[in-house]
Length: 95
Image 1 (cartoon, one colour):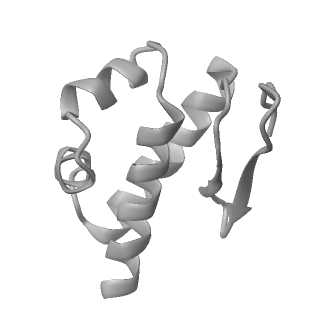
Image 2 (cartoon, helix red, strand yellow; image 1 turned 90 degrees about the horizontal axis):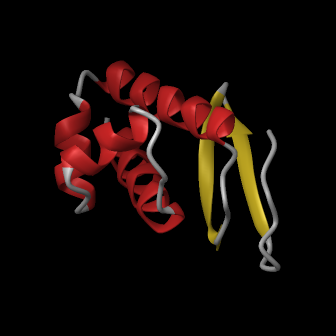
């Protein structure tokens, strides 16, 4: 996975064919192709759980409209991507 290092350590870890965003490396500028892969991975993880993405967004404190703006190609906040990934991880651990 490609990323642009902004001077801070930055990493994305693939796990089980889904991307998990490491909260300790949350400061990144994402290349738009990579952002689309991350969004697809988040959606796949939510679909596996049978949870709509808007519910994941609400649980993570991210406005669903913000998420759908990212999906349409808008710039993304790495902090909010981390929040979505961590929320999905909690949901996966509940199942």
